[in-house]
Image (cartoon, rainbow, N blue to C red):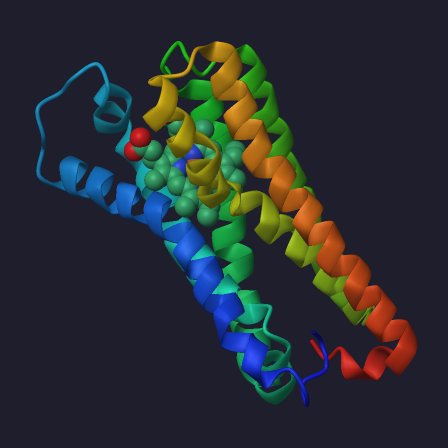
Length: 224
Ligand code: HEM
């Protein structure tokens, strides 16, 4: 998977799949920004977004850039051939927007009056996810500062996987919604946590494969 020379055929489907995963929450975000921009009538469902729009707008714009630029950042071929782009995108697009997504997510968890179905346990999950995302980005920066490219890739992948939980949560909640209707507090928590857990498991699987490939070929092949 990581060898830039023999994996070109598998590169673009990965990026396309990640963008497809982010599509629904990003489109939902575009609708929400449209509602805010056009001064839609206030309802119980949108009052928090209309009264304090800055965090959610920053969150959605940050998530758009982070999810789409990030999808290409993990392609080994692009990374090894376009090192200057990888560095530019990482430093000026992904680190800032990753921090914005996590920080605004934490802010909204703390201060928005979320619907009752988003219970206290889901707030705890969001604090853990937002806090972990910030910590993983910091660890990714620290790793590349000491030129540990393998650890850098692993921490940045973990941060990206947590953010992309928003996409996987569409898959863990929509079938349930179609079959059983709106969830209660417990099932809402299960659906949200399942999205993050699935992504964590997939990220750890990818990281383990990369580690094995690195051991076989030597770290020089995993260029950042
Ligand atoms: C690529 C990643 C992400 C995308 C695409 C995304 C997308 C969105 C969108 C579109 C909204 C607005 C929802 C609405 O209008 O009803 C939102 C709200 C929110 N997001 Fe994210 N998000 C991402 C990552 C995160 C992360 C990592 C956290 C963790 C802390 C988070 C926490 C929240 C919270 C707390 C809200 C407010 C929920 C509410 O008030 O109902 N998001 N997100």
